[in-house]
Image (cartoon, rainbow, N blue to C red):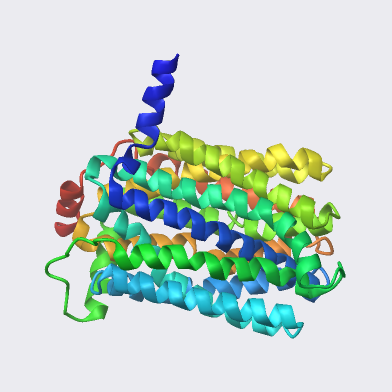
Amino acid sequence: MFARVGEWRINTFRALQHPNYRRYWFSQLLSLVGSWMQATAQQYLVLELSGGSSSALGLVTVAQFTPSLLLSLFAGAVVDRVPRRRVLMTTQIVLLITGLILAVTTHLGVVSLPLVMVLAFVSGCANAFDMPARQSMVVDFVPREAVTNAVALNSLSFNVSRTLGQALFGVVAVLGIRLLAGGDATNIARLAFPFYLNVVSFAAVLYVLATLPFPARPGLRRGKVADDIREGLRYVRGTPTVRNVMLLVGALSLTVINFNVIIPYFARVVYGEREAAFGLLSASFGVGAMGGALWQASKPNPVRNLRLGAIILIVSTIVLALVPGSALAVPVLAACGFGMLTLLVSANSTVQLTIPDHLRGRVMSLYSFVLVGMGPPGALLSSALINKDGPLGSRWGLIVLAALGSLALLMLWRRLPRTLEEPKAAAADWSGS
């Protein structure tokens, strides 16, 4: 038994054997804990400022993810042209500044919903460049045979930090009452404490990015950006494996993968819970996502669980719509997180292992476009459907979202890949099309 556990541990965490990737991974884990505390506090802040409005929550989500919709294609071309260190250092500094402004204005009690939306938009602009740069840099620090594992471990760090950050939010918000709000539990200044902690957490990732030995990338492109964008679009259109995986991710991001709206709204409005329970529900989703990432990290073939992850995600979302209260929602949200990460790690790894390196930034920016860029319309759709005052009500609205996701999965079922293509073969297919 101990031999099996040891083998599982080696297979699951093998990418961490590479020192530069390990440094980056741990710095990201620390920074993302702060980012998730801020994201959870921001959701709660929006609900407080708007009197519990799902529409306001949806609009802030739109402001945050619209830049990915508008800038992803351009960002991918930039990532293939500019040193990744420079891109990542710039995005992290911008995110630090927006976090600091949000902390100070909340602390002083002058924060407003329009200001939160503006800061969310600026952060979204930074993330439009940050995401494809991060996804592209996986291949900089691990060999090809460890790429699937590194992608899964990136998702693991994202969701470990989600779990810790969202669970810590309840504790940190209580500390904020004492430290910043003078003991007044209704003073909005209490929510500034998570924002301050997030600003501090940026120090670790900035230091590591400044000192990591990024490998040189010879032959960075100098032609027209528009030509680069068209080249990436032609490649995706002419490569069925990449195209169909992206279509599935985009369709589910538009419908089911809107838990940044669903969880806070169900917690606060449908279940009538406060900060601690809100943090617990969010953390349970993160625990499930962490399990999905760990499971995928030990799997050598990312294609196998693509369909399974989508099924688990859709079915558990339907069950979530039916559970009567927050206690039963905890394990169901864990199942939602498990299914979502099983799907997304499979999809990301399949795309990463199929594309040639010279197109990586542009293709991964398209992946970001369908995953994050569908956030604005998805947030509007989900917030409208789950509104308790809407024609369907919260529970039936969530069932309709899951049904739309099911329809997309059925339409793409036969077209999704069952085997993994080599990058050269995929590139050859595209160039001949």
